[in-house]
Image 1 (tube, rainbow, N blue to C red):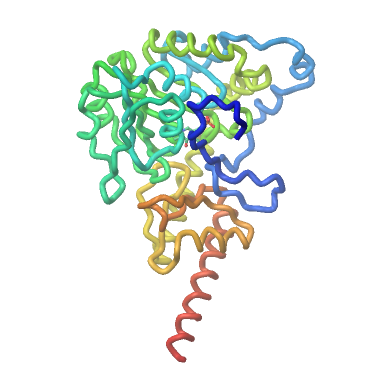
Image 2: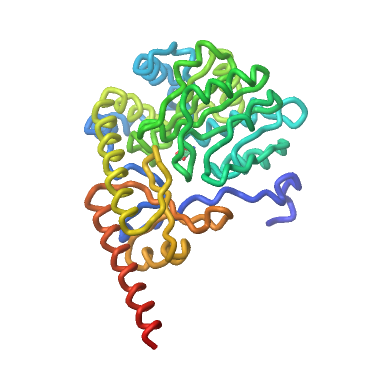
Length: 365
Ligand SMILES: *Cc1c(COP(=O)(O)O)cnc(C)c1O
């Protein structure tokens, strides 16, 4: 740290992204990307003509992309916000809708790590609400009308989802605060609360192209809400970086909407693979949550969470391990292709067999 840093940020603990190795020698099941490539339409959208226009700024209003999203999701274009990844939207939302005096913020203690980072970045008073022992949320913890509420639904890294009815209870109980529902994983089996935005002016629904639309590398997120909430976010965007979605990403995002069927088909394959792999893991003795996302959250009674992560890494498979209590016995495993998951299951069986043998040997001695 230099001696020039603004003291406000001196103690800030930044978000730790999952490993992004530059060589592709790993089967990469650690950051919930799609194992499937972008659709043909997206690949064709980034053609030579598009690249040759990179000397020109992109459309800062992103009107065409907004209109396409509005049509696909049956909302008004003025109810859509788009930005450079949903992290960017979360960032703007913490700026726009949180402050210690009137709108402190509340989120689950086990959830997407960025919520805490943004709260600390902006010095907003926050409550990290413990989960129940089974990792479920007690929605009554979020009905106090005393804070902005941020909930990932389905939650990460547990994969557990709340119903639209439960979300509505939280939204209706907090009329004087924004309730932000981060639906990064909703396309894999969650129930969206999107159609509540016409009834509740405090609901903001945040989505991303990173997981279900195979575009993590393009950085594109979108959000739905009451037109005035959207205008607030636009104000923040135009006060920080109006051109924060580049030309190529805009084109890719538009083309992906035209190919929606391709992406939704991929999501259903992933959801099916998740169910199949969870069944096999349970047969091997794992405990898995009832994940509705594109990842599995699992622990084994005879395997240390971190040791499993390390051993798999040595064998060329990357999964995600979190050090924090009470989840450090678990690993989060992105659902890849069937072939990738077969490979994972094979390696896990080998690890378990070896361990069994060793234990027997010890008993013999
Ligand atoms: C991956 C993820 C994001 C970030 O998505 P980007 O659009 O890539 O910034 C946001 N929220 C949750 C819960 C996520 O898992």
